Amino acid sequence: MRILIVEDEPDMARLIRRRLGKAGYACDQVLNLEDALEALKQFPYELMLLDRRLPDGDGAEAVPCIRKLRPSVRIMMVTAIDAPQERVAGLDAGADDYLVKPFDGEELMARIRARLRSPGGGKAPPIIVGALSFDPAARQFFVAERPMTLHKREFTLLETLVRRVNRVVARATLMEEIYGFDDTVSPGALDTLVSRLRKRLENIHADVEIHLVRGRGYLLNEIGS
Image 1: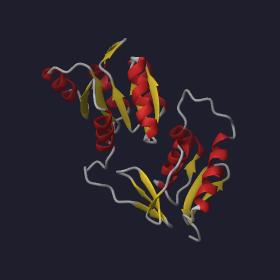
Image 2: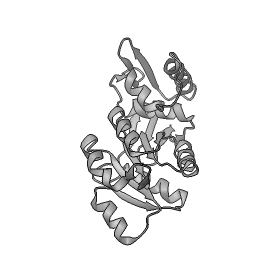
Image 3: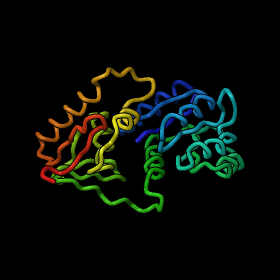
């Protein structure tokens, strides 16, 4: 699950990134609309947190262009502009939500979870593979009904694989989901991460395995299937 933060205030950007990182989300941050549009061309973001007062314009005015580039991306305005007519203007421009600064961190995360739910608004059912289950709404893994603790990149890797269970996930897709565009990534980083996650799943008897499909990527399925 990848999120784009469009925010030019360093302290605010750092606060949001820290919150998202602790929740297991992969995120990138840019300072202006020009860089935001370029990032959207490169990566399939699920959600973007968009400020309004940016160095090169009003975020609300860029929403139609954003929709053309990524019709399915959810857009949440996160801004200090709090007049009722401005909130209306932001939502009418095409934003899915409007959160005013300063905000409560828990409310931010709750709104993000709400925006990322299934399009119909209902709670998505758990994904079950072997003894492993994933609750998409809570973004929590369980093994034999016990919560599973993972490091951030392990979590993102497993989430990406389990959402495409029994299908090959391309290396490029995994790299885009796990690593930000400003991360320095060594050539074997993904393979090392997969190896570490395999051992963790084996040690807790998750009854799933991750296969390397040479020249293509990785696939997760139930052991013996």
